View 1 (cartoon, rainbow, N blue to C red):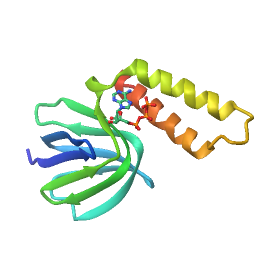
View 2: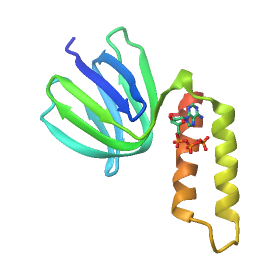
View 3: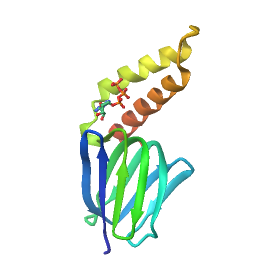
View 4: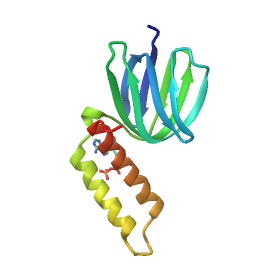
Length: 135
Ligand code: ATP
């Protein structure tokens, strides 16, 4: 079975490296599946899960908070502001972040940055979903 090398990199360093048979990401214009030999392209990502199908039939899940995917026939690079594999997600922390973001979004105060709170809410929900395998 053909494979493609995938690396996910954040400002903190490499977050994931593996050979996979398929990558599925959430781009800003919808879900995109990438197989080995895909034509070169770059696309912006939404907050979402990256699904990585392995040769042994297992699937890895990584939560990313946006960024870009760069595709070449033999290599897929994802550059993201943050990325966590399912096992490394602190779900209690994500639930706290979710509560804070919900509180801000429901607040009637004028000085709330709603876009920022909405983005924080999406990051927290995505981490909870990836951790719980709810993808
Ligand atoms: P918080 O308010 O809990 O910091 P956040 O969404 O503002 O959440 P980010 O700015 O997206 O956090 O990420 C900051 C760093 O913390 C990144 O390295 C990210 O991978 C890590 N991180 C954030 N939340 C979690 C989590 N629930 N589990 C593991 N790592 C996390």
